[in-house]
Length: 370
Image 1: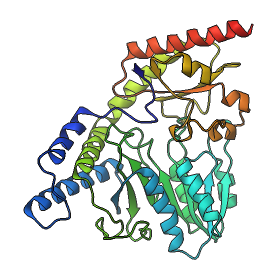
Image 2: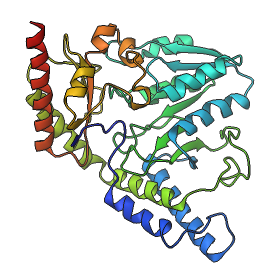
Image 3: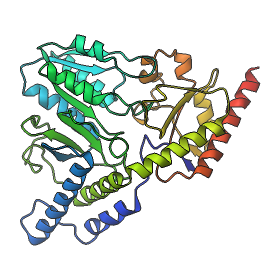
Image 4: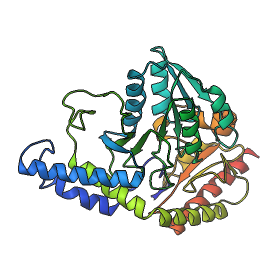
């Protein structure tokens, strides 16, 4: 199996696995217990907290651990709305379902939600954003790096526009952490461990001081009085170590992704079109289409390769990608698109082998259709 689905999840870093092991095996105490063992576990959680905060790299705020980035985004949106008399939310049509579905939930409870379009490059128009802002806007939610097409939104400028209108800015930085710098400006930032070679089952919400959302989960307030539930020291340690590695290796990982990007295009050959901006983009995400391609069939034919048709969260729905539709692609074009994701542990030789297999299978479909 050649793994090329890094946007869905990343391989666990050996260093993260090693950091987790003691807290799974011998040091199993509850970090909220007053015992000596509990205190040791609590100290490990705090080390991990510092590592994740350092990887985010912003001053004037701190994180609370969550069960996932989906929880963090739900918490940010619902908890912020609960604390404010403002009733409008502005977001982007290409956001992750965790944002879009939560906005719909809030809309059904009286919120006014504006969904900004994007251009063919996948980028939001700042002038359209500014025109949509008024004194009723509570929050602007925008992703840093899109999970399906890899384009990088101008998050700093979006945050500034939100602040100029007296609103807050929520940034989904799940695909950005450790890959691109997180800019100054956002007031709330959601991140996830398993997208940066950490374990599944843990995320975090970074909150600017004084702007913490109302609690979403009640029952003990173990996490800073804002989130209830027993933390896993093992998951926290794995997240912390993965975040530290991602920060230390960001430039090296980016250079590796760039080399792989160039090798991938060379291996594919002609006939492929990139979805989204080629310039303002994380290069470890290659979302491409080919005229007439049956992408679902291609996926079924190449069982030795792990790649995807779009977001793992929407796989199996049968619907064309909402992200690709927002770019102006037809249903047929969206269903002719595939997403190739690669990164730190991808070898150039295996990537080239996989892309040649994909290109060969695509040409075979061309011949059948001729």
